[in-house]
Length: 143
Image (cartoon, rainbow, N blue to C red; front, side, top):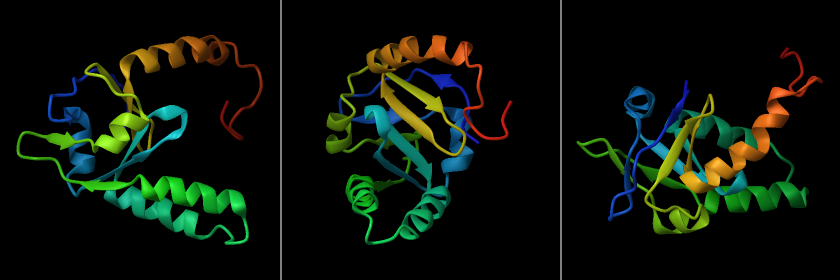
């Protein structure tokens, strides 16, 4: 499970060292793809296969499902960390997420997310107060 907030740096070759706590989960390979709110989703290969199978269940007659599938998969890149635990983020994904040198990598349970630090700070500032004052059930069965 991916948890926590980490602040690695993007090197000049577009590589990032993913947090040590995430390495065991990702040792079988990983998939990077576009995420919502202009971040990059990081899935273990196993979790990406599970998510892909769920997506495949969507009806082909659904324009929204087709659109999502196209954007989600066309941006996906299968990667393997090198011996120094660095992962290359493809240029198209770095551009999509507006990544600079300063990154924030967050754990989001079944995936990690890579954010440009300024974008993460802006998102966090906008959402934290809403989170702290949540008074209704947002996710069924939780709280």
